[in-house]
Image (cartoon, rainbow, N blue to C red; front, side, top):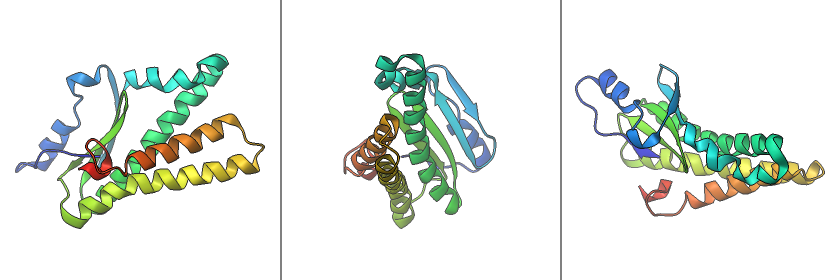
Length: 167
């Protein structure tokens, strides 16, 4: 999760500026015009499909969509928490993960709650996938989804930048 720069007198202009792609993102696709937006760096697809290479194109697509879902659901939790506190949010999916640009930035306990929202949701989804994996003849993609969510949620609890609790 990343906070945007302090808002200026016109918050709509500041939000529009923060929702623009950064040069380092490469080609991006953007969705949304309201209080929550989504920007996806197309380069995200390259590392996302690698775990499925051995299974051919269908497996690559399945694993790519799984990793995309892990990142977007984690960042969506941050964004929804920010919206609950009256801010606007842009979810940015980058090559090696994601972040949320929040405008106006949150401070104090609101920032802490927003930072914790992503890891909590990731850990909950990971545990649910693990339980479903055991109940449904243990499909490989569900094990992968469990591992990815648990790993993503756990690593974002580390108190170091760029992780959620390092900010």
